[in-house]
Length: 205
Image 1 (cartoon, rainbow, N blue to C red):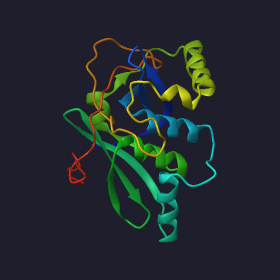
Image 2: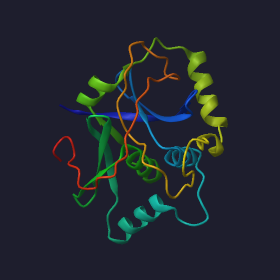
Image 3: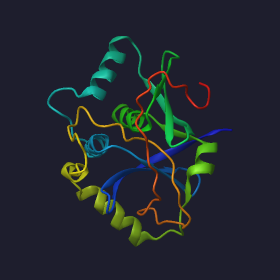
Image 4: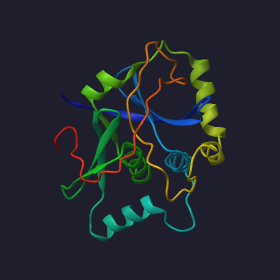
């Protein structure tokens, strides 16, 4: 199946658990993909969307600098599949390399490098949620929330480590929902630690 381009709507906090959720929206279809991510990753994504740059390179910025020194860049990132409760992503570089990654890291790199983000159509069909009828007020309120929320809002007390450099990998997974949520109330997707670097990419790539 084809890959569908998505826009990064932003990060919201699911209450009362204070769980950050990354929300992706298909460009040509009224469908959203919510993914639970860690608090540190959510803070970095929020910072990048606001155009803030740290005084010294953070890990994702350093990776882009290393790629640049080797004459490569990020062409695109793709959420390729889900295995049990964990989503997987792939980073495609300009020199033809493919790198397996967590969706939160892949999206963060794409935002920093101004690269497009895609989701496999099968993932969007199986794990996405339908967008409700357009509600300009609701969209405006959600975007206002994203514009005014601060990085501190993404560091719940429940997190064992709230540093921006090292966060627990509670990242990237699938929901159990029945209702059709508002884009500002994406259904729960919980994500398990991506602690097995040898794990195969679900789509075999």
